[in-house]
Image 1 (cartoon, rainbow, N blue to C red):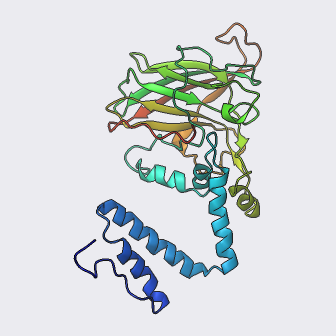
Image 2: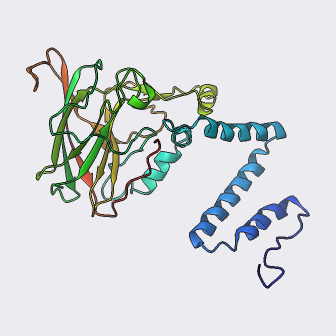
Length: 306
């Protein structure tokens, strides 16, 4: 308890204008200055939002039910809070604010997404990450990681993951074995790693949670364009989280998560000649792409699912 009896008094609310400053005063004794800054801004903006839209009691209850729905829908295999942040552009805004879009070097960063997992199987260069029968044309990816001066980064750990041809990740689909279309690679002395998979396809995001009805009401297509996910980690460099999109995907300009930037569009090439593997005939695809890491603190994100 504080010695000063007025320490935790916020005043009697005598008008609507008293509420916001009273709440800010109530939080003003937090010892962490960043916590004070963030929460005071949150209260100011949320109270301003309420004053602007003037929700009815019924609308307020709908909003509370929406937030409750996010919690009820989230499981060990699915994080609906991440999806909510994605479809309203919040995740992309945070990503680009923290990675300097419009600066001297366009960012190669993108959303982590709700389906990254720790401890993907360590995989040899050139090996396949297709771990069970999975339809789709073969794709051979030759990747390289450099610093922002173009020098190779050896020894970086790189997670790769993507959805299957039915638009689901392994944790969503009982028809796939665990770790299908996932792998971890270590870059060689020239910063390179390579792997075989299938050509990624676009897919609809899950709409069984509370974000689904909102997207439907807004007549928004719940679609993500085809992409591969990458997460590169090495001490001394900022952890790179990125996605590489297919330029010819019909939804490239209407990603429901607003995640496509020009720097993230890859050169996926359709091939019909001899493939790098003898068991591949007919059409196949290649991807040659360089990812750039910048100096900084190497911190792995918290996995959105267990």
